[in-house]
Image (cartoon, rainbow, N blue to C red):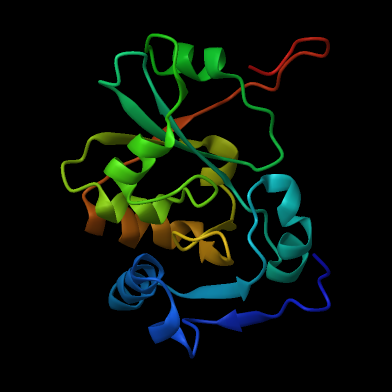
Length: 192
């Protein structure tokens, strides 16, 4: 991606009616709650590494949004963390006192959050009607002024004020976030 083609816009796109229903629902929810946001439309971004140009234009870090589950698929976590911070499942599993967690599969992503791989976002919690998914924020992301996420599709990215996420969005969705401190892996250890 070249950031010369990318532009930061305020609010929903003018062509919102031509967007997928899941993306439209994000804009409707944010607008209804009075949450301000800026948006960048872009080519599909399937990984944090593909978001460098987007982050430059949107002027904030795109957060990793990881959907994790235990082996029995009886416990699900959405973890929101800094995009560039390495993630180790065993560290998070220990912090939340869960049996070893792993990444949820595409079927679970769609069933619980209505999302596909590469589009996982905190905004997908609006689709978790049974409140099956637990939410955790890494302290670094929770304390940042802004963070970026997708509006349930990986062809747009939003810049949200973190305080509005905690003060408006999460209460409206019936969620509270557990704040965790994910350690940085020691040099020489592998990310799992």
